Each structure stands twice: as structure tokens, then as C-alpha cells.
Length: 248
Image (cartoon, rainbow, N blue to C red; front, side, top):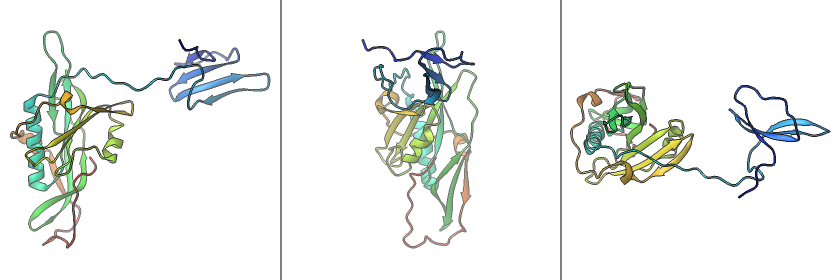
């Protein structure tokens, strides 16, 4: 067994008693502190790094979630494909989950939040840019809690981009992405975020095998709004290239 800490550990919930002794560690809302008391000085300083006398610890995660039902995955892919085929854009769904209760199993629900596709028009068609903004949405029921998000990367791979990873650090929960959404063999990626720590998740543990898309609820497409960021163009700009794997 590893030896204990050099000093006692105090938790600051409301206030701390005066320091009595050579020192102590203080666990506070804004981090870990070391307080020292010597004949020459008394001080409290932030502690960053290892704590002498304690064993190391590592982040860990155990998920107790069932896989998303096949019908919801197929509807999600139907929605992502529709948005891509109509506007070459990305799309997002919010994942809700009702935990098991009494004799009722846990249940998933997907909700399309209001989402804004930025882009331009040319040749009589809207073409989405790299940007997708979305707003808040209501829970589908009192028993449901927000679990995370499921968003598409249009025709590029499902790997979470640096921007995705940064944005998701501030939203605890399950985050799924779908790539190559208009191909016969779309691909998926999954991660779970807790306290700004990101854990890769095996896709097969949270998603069933995808077979084919099915039409999404019309209410989902009704949440998509288009915003032209440039003047309408009669034809594409020579050499212009679009990459839809952008910010959500």
C-alpha cells in the first residue's frame, strides 16, 4: 500500500477552519491547493502536478447504455442523406434517453433542433458551406434526459474534427458522427465526454449494424433553415472547392 499524503486533505464546501499544523491540501471548487505553515511564512498556493505520497490514478469510463435502436439509426441516416442530397450540408440530431424504470426498459429518442445551414446559391441550387449552427430543443418527455448528439459529416469521414472535439468537451454525454452518408457503406464514430475528458467508444457497443436508411420524420427537415452568405451566383466560381466537414 502506498503511503498517505504528506499533509491532511480538507474539502472546502463552505469555509475552512484556520490552518493548524505544518500544512494541508485543500480541495476547492477551483482546484487543488497546498497550504503551508512555517515559522517564517504561511501561504496557500495552487497545486499543479503530482502529489507526493499518493499513487497515480487514470481516467476511466464504464457505459451502461443499450445500443441505439435500429429504426432510429435508419431514420437518422435518412435525415442526414436528405440534407446532403438537397443542400450538400451537414445535419445534427440531439439524443435523449429515458433510463429503465420499474418494468420498463430504457428508451431512446432523437430530436432535430433548429439548425441553420450557411451557404450560397448558384445554378439555381443552394450549396452548404462549412458551417452549421443549431439551437436548443425540448425534451420529448419528462422521463427523458439529454444524452448527447448525433451529427453528420456529409461526404467526408466520420472522425471527430478538432473543432468537434473542442465543442463537445463542454457537453457531457455520448457524441456520434456519421461519415460518407450518401454511400452504400457509411461509417460512424463514437465518443463519450465526462468533465471535459473525452473517451473513444467502440461503435458496435452503441450502434446496431446499419442496413439501409428510412425516411426521416418531416418535422426534422422542417427544422433546417438556409442562409445565403454570398450574393446569388449564376455559375460556380472557377477552382472553388467545398469541404463539408465543418463546425457544428
